[in-house]
Image (cartoon, rainbow, N blue to C red; front, side, top):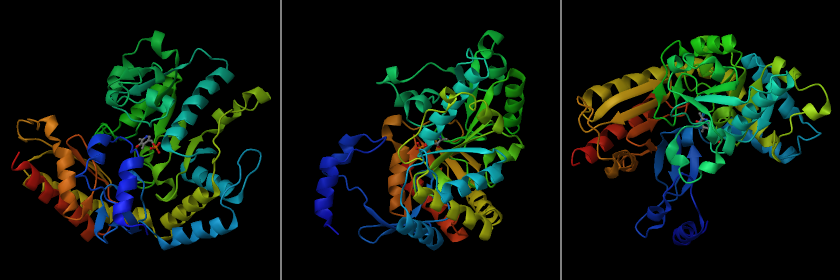
Length: 431
Ligand SMILES: *Cc1c(COP(=O)(O)O)cnc(C)c1O
């Protein structure tokens, strides 16, 4: 491998990172971590230092890094066929994966793309075109929730509600109806609701908002509202899909079925970029008519065979290793450890958790909820300090995110929480 100094120079002179203020990144004193290997819940840097992957590599990793079965299946696929087009051709992996996803969800049609954002674009475009094809072209607007995040491509960003991400490029976004809650949605006048194509939600928990939980039963009521107003329900399960919440998909906690299910991050077990937008036969049939009603959308790597092989292998592991049963133990250990952290650490204002997802909100004074000065970047400082205790994760403001890979054993989960506890004390005591 090229030596560390040369890589560091290339890194600082030529790369540009997502969601990253680059001035401190390229500063002389900054030492970025070069990750070179992954094993189970661990990532290993160039110096051979191991770290627990506390956010599952930005919420993607399910069965652990370098899982031998996933690696074997992807390598075998690479030796047979790495890619061919899904335009006018198909391949066995895509057909099987579509059938298995349909079987898992009850949504019979699967449209593949590459990332959460593109899978959202697909759902939004399909919703609009569906209403057009069934003779209701006036249904052309979307509703979404405050603080929602649905990805970074233009339409996905338009239904997202994190102003900081868009302040200097507002013309890339279209106008969307925003509501705070189900109650606010229910108050929308008919003049608004009759023009709605679809509502978008991160079911049960909003991720980028800082792991904010919806009230129990909210999704079920939302489904009923959508039915009553003939508005399509788009469930963005890019974060919550594939066992994260303790069930295969979050919507299954409330026994509803969305009109669109958007899947990405964990779809391949965290191995390859692949996404899927699932929908019903009713939506699909509206596109059958004349050829002009075809769904004119797609990407070069749509249904990439390597991605499909990884996703199929991941589903095999879910079945063969009884992952959903086994993860209940990990979830219990995780919740108990977080409970202790919340009791014992005086800077923990609130812990919001669901399955193997946690947002740990820090405050200077937990009883008055007095915040730290935003300029102190306490969340980021804590995550940096946690590296010394063998944990990698990223904060959202002063909310620390912990999202262990589903394969993490109890000792690894305890170590993740313990690393944060130590890091919080080191950073917050002097502030
Ligand atoms: C990450 C995420 C997205 C965007 O997915 P990408 O693969 O990063 O494009 C969309 N929605 C939710 C809920 C996410 O967590």
